[in-house]
Image (cartoon, rainbow, N blue to C red; front, side, top):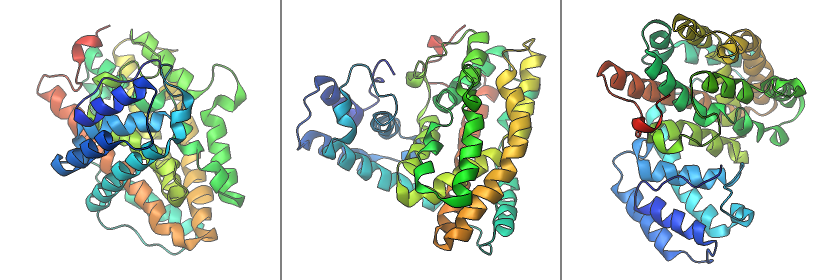
Length: 343
C-alpha cells in the first residue's frame, strides 16, 4: 500500500503517528495504554473501527507494507506484542460467536462430509442473490469495494500455511493456490482478474485504495485470515477457512456474474466470477478431502482448529452480508465514506 490508512480512534491515531515517525522505541507506553483502554471500552471488537484498523495496519506490515514506512517494523517486538493483545481479544470473541463445532471421525471422507454440512446451514442473508436480482450499479460498486480488501491480494493469507503442512495436505493446498495465482501466467492471477472487474465499473484497482471506506466488520473478515495464516498454531484454522471459502464459492460467484450481466457488463468485467464458478467446483473437493481431511488424518489434534476456521467464515460472512443488505434495503450506503467511491 502507498499510504497508511486514516486513524479511526485513539489507538490507531497513536499507532499511525508512531509508525510515521519511524522511531518506535522498545517501550511504547502510549500504545499500550491506548490498547488497554480500547479493549476495555469496546462494545464488540468485530465492529470496532479503531481496533480493526489497528489490526489491519499491523498485519499489512507482513504483506506489501506501506511505502512511507521502513520494513524493519515488521518484526518490531513491541508491535508484535500489541498485535498479540488484539488477537487474543478477537479470538475470544470468535470462539464465543461460532457455537458448537462438528466432531467427525478423523478420516478424509468424514471430515469433508462434515465441512460440507457445516457450510450448507443457514449462513444468513444472501448478498449474491441480491446482487443477482436487485442491486443497482452503485450498490454493485460498493459490493466490489468490500470484496477488494481481500480479493486484490487473493490468496496470500492462505499461502502462509504451505510451509506448515506436509504430504497430501500440502500438495492439495499448493494445487489450489497455483490456480489462484493463475498457474504462473502473467495477467491470470485471480487478484488481477478482480482488478479488471473493478476497472470495468470505474473503480480504482490498486490494493488499499478504499481501505478508509470499508467498515470494521469488513476489515475483520480479512484480519481473521491474517490471524490464522500468520500463526502455526492456527494451521488447521487457515486450512478450514480455505476449505469453507472454496465450498461456498461456486454458486455465489455464478450469481454475481448474472448480476453484472443484468447491469450490462460482460467480459472482462465478469471474468473473475466466471473463472470461480468452474475452478471452485473442483477446488471444493480438493480443499475438503485432500487438504483439510488429509491434515486431520495426519494429525487429529488439529480437527477442532480446522472446524473453527471453517465456522468463522460462516459466522463473519453472515455479519458482513447483513451489514450490506441492511444498508441497501434502507436506501443508504454500506460504506463509511461513500462519497469517495462514485464512478
